[in-house]
Length: 624
Image 1 (cartoon, rainbow, N blue to C red):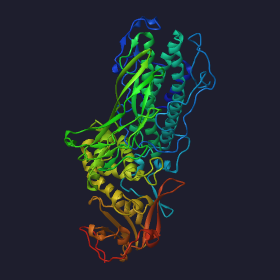
Image 2 (image 1 turned 120 degrees about the vertical axis):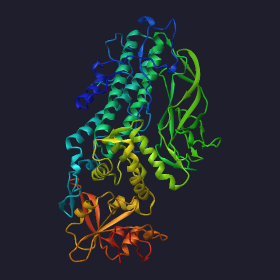
Image 3 (image 1 turned 180 degrees about the vertical axis):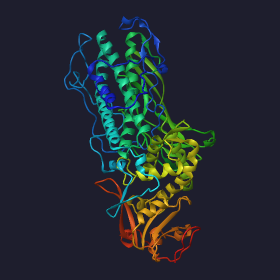
Image 4 (image 1 turned 90 degrees about the vertical axis):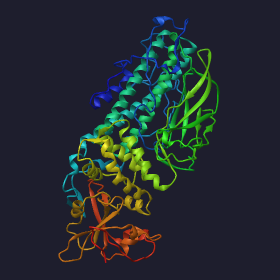
């Protein structure tokens, strides 16, 4: 298999894009055919050249592979799949005549709609406004004038330079072009291969054999480029969204290529003893924290049966799902963990599962896997057997809201580290961004407010000592603080809306707060998470005493303990707070800025009822 251990460069991706048109292909795959189909040599094959020796082929090309990109499967308006050429053509008489699409010419074969595994992304050509977030410098703007936010350590110390961000977007765009071309290639390849079995021809066999190896090599190199981006670049949310889509689609294309290649080898004496089909997950809502009694909605979980080009399906049994536990402690004996777990496949070989989760998983990760019995006709023989899907991405089922924080801890740990003890800071930060967007129920394509460069700077400096490598042993110290903050954002009334609107800044040191409030008049205040009290808010404000000075108050649990009495209500009732600083990003420079707003104007839609009272916290200024 090709060596992927080289640095990323645009030339590498561009060379992959030329694979399908130059007739070259570089290094061919030289791995024995995957044993999954139980291949055996069969005498009297339609094509007797080549001696019937060992054929090169694909290894285990699972759509999930060894990397598990956690995050909801991309949901977006997608365009229909592309089609190939429009006019039919006979097989070429010599192996030098190319029968497939290339960079410069359309397909010579009729093309039905290509195999659309998941959903289609229309374009990667434009950046959303949120793409600006990866371009912060070590300054912020407050009311139009620059001021230092992170005075101790500049975020520019690890912020991706402009050139790197542009390169990452270019690489993703080029991989997307490759994926689109592969859609057309697979459609044409399937039609040509189907005709080849009807009328075997040696030259066409060789052309298909070479083209399938080239396509597989190109896809594997493109996947390696995406993995390298995740490990070496702090990506914005649109880039993460696109990479997840591409990883899913390209891995499914590898599965289809594996089927085509195994089927093709029947012509030179290899006779599979198992059906040439794969059951693959094309849409899933995982990873996620589900709750006991929840039922997946229509379209959330879908599978498809992939098959060889000339394979004819004779019969199918219903598809049955089962839950796999990652820990023996997660099981509950004979209790039924899921229902609605058996479904019929439709005529397009797609099946949807409205799974209902009947029991919790004790905060442990679990997967779903699916099986069915199939009988097919392939190469003139009837073959039947059991087909099993790969596992879904992990999820956790909670029985009550208090378990949510621990469940999310499990999912992020799996996403960031997998089976490794340490990963690059960029790998961890990208996983953290995916998890935050999902956990706060935002659109992964265009979240209203994701983690910013300054949030990442805070996390890196506070919990990981500004090191380029994140060790799993440091994870619990980080999560014990961050997880409680995330639980508040997710579940405490109004906090998610306040975060998304910038009325809660979030992750700031006291030095950062002093920089933001410096030069402000009495009554200006900022809401942030307390550094020493996980999950509690600190309010920094400019006091009215002479001389003016910045004070800090820790919001106590009983400050907002009354029924329907929220953080905005608490701020309303305190005369020390008059003008809140709202965080936003300058649309021109991409730099953070604070804009002052009268608190009654900013909080008006969040107010409930007026209740007085106040408590003070240890180490914080009391309020009158």
